[in-house]
Length: 445
Figure: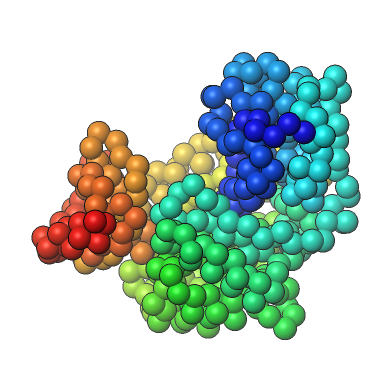
């Protein structure tokens, strides 16, 4: 392996993938590679794939083609869920040189004796049943926030999902080792940590440690302003977790809770571990303790057996729930899942029409939530990116605000008054005290 070669990365899919890409990137930099942007004709490309939807598979092929258009001699490595599930399919893509499975990707440097292009792609992909090691990690590059991997794999076999086949059994490090990772982040300039994984609420897998105990210990880590819980299953989001967040100084009032369907019939067919009553109770508890809490929802439309009546049941259920926004997924058939064998297939045009209806509902929910926040005082963590002289930031309860760009407040948590929602759906603000900017200027000098 020649040191001082250039490497570029591209990540598809979830926040967990981004944290793992960052971890692998740091390994390669330590090995002597220089990290560059995708378009800078690097010597090697590493593409971290997703396989949740068919589009992610197609995107992988497109990225390989795009990479080789920048540098036809570049060594192309494919990792991630798609690489674990369909290694031979990936190896057949013209221009791919190395395919690594779920465990092998964390030892990428071991497979780089040469970065000369190969006539036939080399595949290292052990059975997912042999993938038992947990490799921690966190994303870097955005000094405002980081995605911290606290868990991997899943023991839930939902009928539509390939993740257990791609990532293996649920696993994690101990609380003490996880806290060590958080302390590493605290030594950087990052202000907010997003806890991520495949099924983070399953931390501990019913053993001596659990997710509630973990967040209690993370609360004590000095040097991090905010912790944000990413997607957590409703059956694992206990009342004690909700109560803890409601009183916490660091864990913010924002939950993302997968629902998938508002029909008990479909929830059972999906092999989910809760029903509508439990889901509703979680939302009601959150809103009782934190009326201004932001709640995001995952929902799948077009799952086999979703009649018009069942879809309307889901729509009505979401309409009445006090949630803040939706992530709408159009069901797509995935190989090696139980759902692909189910009858009563919903035609694709119907799936798309239902997706459109729910996305419109999501926009209405989001606007209503933002309007509820008008005239409220909140703390905003401002980001470095700007466009046409405008910068953005997020409140603790995930309201996106806009303000004239000011480098003094980048990566600072600043109290503001939210004034009104503009035509783009963003919140305008006023700084509470003019002396804030003067104080921040003194801090940065």
